[in-house]
Image (cartoon, rainbow, N blue to C red; front, side, top):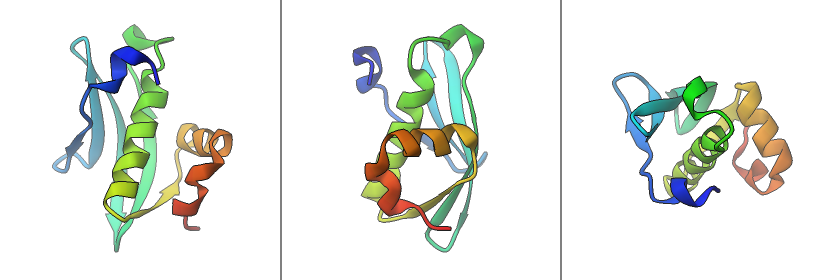
Length: 97
């Protein structure tokens, strides 16, 4: 993860059902639905202003760490999250079908 992003806190915005990462006044987010201890990760979006800085990958990594720390499982329905897990198979243990 890019050093500038390590200390930025992940926000779980329960009202909007999304995880958020605020960088330089812009918000990247992953929308989700929670059902019985499983988070369905639906869509990842990062503003164009943050392109090329690794914000999307940092957001996914921080979200996966949240899932791990809270003993949850996930369904990666978002293609970006799915691709991240494919490149980082250590997260596969948290995936349910």
